Image 1: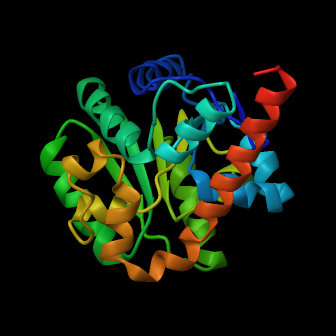
Image 2: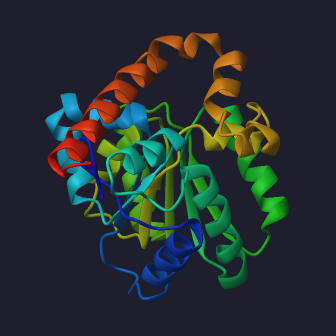
Length: 247
């Protein structure tokens, strides 16, 4: 489903979990990873400006709507997506599968303290998962060590939490690594560690998670200035389609 030039898979969270788990179950342990990209309205606007990111999204194996704004825009444009599938929700569900199947999971990103806290908490919750990870503040030598470690571990699931678009570009630049599936998860490592609190379920049900995050982190206002521009473009595109179709 095309939303302002970005193609999204019309998929539910349950379907996304099933698809990704199927890829990992069928992975031979040596092949390069499938890439999953979750894109919110800010990401759509960024992809419209940056051809490299747009190419990464276009080549990804699965692209989900990480934001209610994308879902609403798709409905305005006449190609409705079934629901929002965030990186945080998808990762959480996949870890439950990893627990049942004893997957190797590698976390890359966040600060050293946050990563350590996340690994400790996740190890408690999912003790049958084989946990590995490195923080996201690395130089060229550190990156070489990370790559060598991933090659040695061969994780079933590689979760990269370095923020968009850096995480997606990093995964795309390392598509030769042996991993089952690689996915960007934004600030989810900080949430797992307890350093950042995710919006309560009540806010998420009201589709106001973006507002909760803005109230908690006012510094996000510059990033979220893309939201009204996204809404105007989507609404205009939707009106154009309706007029073309005679509605």
